[in-house]
Image (cartoon, rainbow, N blue to C red):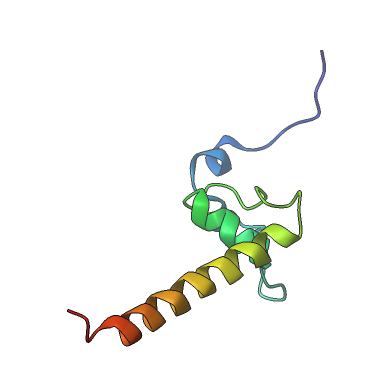
Amino acid sequence: MRTDFDFPNKYLIGPVVFRPDFNTPEETISVNQAWSLFFTAGQEDKVFDFNGEAGRFLTYLLLAVSVTGVLGVTLFSHVI
């Protein structure tokens, strides 16, 4: 079996954010890439590339949980 995969080993050990081809100055990372880096601790940036809605869903979920927490503390702080 012959493969054309020739990726230097020094780039396979470290996180993806330290690879030279990642995030050049003229491009920005997407929401999906940001969440992928968060959940994989910087090891992979294409975990959520299968679905474009996954990054927005996680962002809105985080926002909803934060707003609910702030409102809960504000409204029920006098109960204790």
